[in-house]
Amino acid sequence: MRRALWPALLFVVLWTAGAAAQNSEIDARLNAEKAKLRAAMQAEHGLLRQLYAVDHLRYQHERDLAALNGQLSALQNELQKDQAEFQRLEAESPIRSARLSRRLGALYRMGRGGFWKVLLTSDSFSTFLRRYRQLKQVVRADAEALTSHRVQLLALRQRRAELVRRQAHLTAGREKEKQEALNVEIEKQKKTFMLAEIRRDKVLAERLARDLANQDAAVNQTVAALPTAPAGARVERPLRLDFAQRKGNLPTPVSGPIVGRFGMRLHQVFGTQTRSNGIDIAVPAGTSVHAVADGTVTYTGEFLGYGRVMIVDHGLRFHSMYAHLGSFARAKGDPVYQGDVIGTVGSSGLYAEPVLHFEIRHEGAAVDPLEWLRPTP
Image 1 (tube, rainbow, N blue to C red):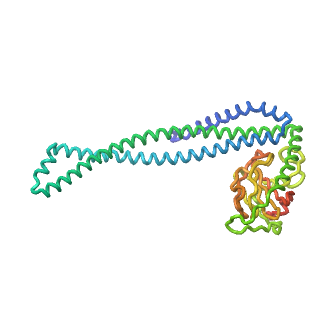
Image 2 (spheres, helix red, strand yellow):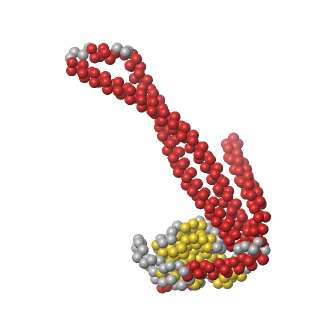
Image 3 (spheres, rainbow, N blue to C red):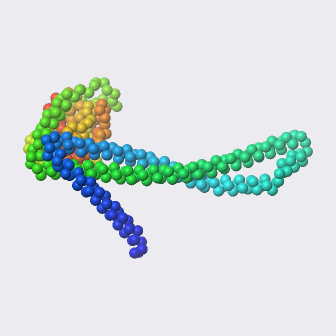
């Protein structure tokens, strides 16, 4: 029993040591950045833009990590196919060798004059021709078998070399994958540190509140200027564009507690008075976000303070906006139907924890989403 526990204990020890080493590297790199981050935040530069820069770098590392994961997954599948082919060739090789050895042994025992004996003992010319053709086919088959065996041996050696190369490539890729995951975690920690500094420093918090007010004005202008979705776009079925008649009966985009409400409020992260044009719903990262009504995606991108944003046009100048997304599941110009998954929840923008910011706007002006959503029990 004790002997059986040793492998498990060894795994736990090695895993703990690896995790500790990774945390140590994160701490070392983060500590090296903290002084520069503090200096940059104290300078008269936009805090929203600095937070955006950290978020943007994290997005880049996340994209690189996702692309690398896809490449490694494809490489792993190819490697498995190569291994299966290698095993097939390896299993066939001794069978072919044994068959060829038996044939060569028979030819050796027949002797060099064996073919002539067969031909010269023919009792007629037609028998001679028939035996000649048969022997010619035997010689050709033997030559082809020998050539095929040589080709198979060469293929086996090439497969073995290819397997070694691919294994090395996969190992190097896994190391790069670990580094990219580490980079993502460091950018997350940098953002957490910056948000904590803003919470701690009242001057920074007030500067951020001013930045947010300016950014809200810019968002209002952007939404008001969005073009109306083109009529007649190709769709699976007609879009139901009766948004105005569905007030109080729209489904929520995600199910979770509302941690921030519409209007003036004390910002839950920084403790400053700010105006919110929507509601904040706390849900786990990666939660699917659903369209609250039929419409057309008219914007996917990033706003300072809002992170990744998607805006859906519901007709008659009604729009719904989904912010702090982790990913998009639809692109600009795509039709969506009520309940469709349009993205996932993330922690982009001003939040270090996952949250969905949801807005409803009419002619560019924000309205209270809770007046439009179906009451939840």
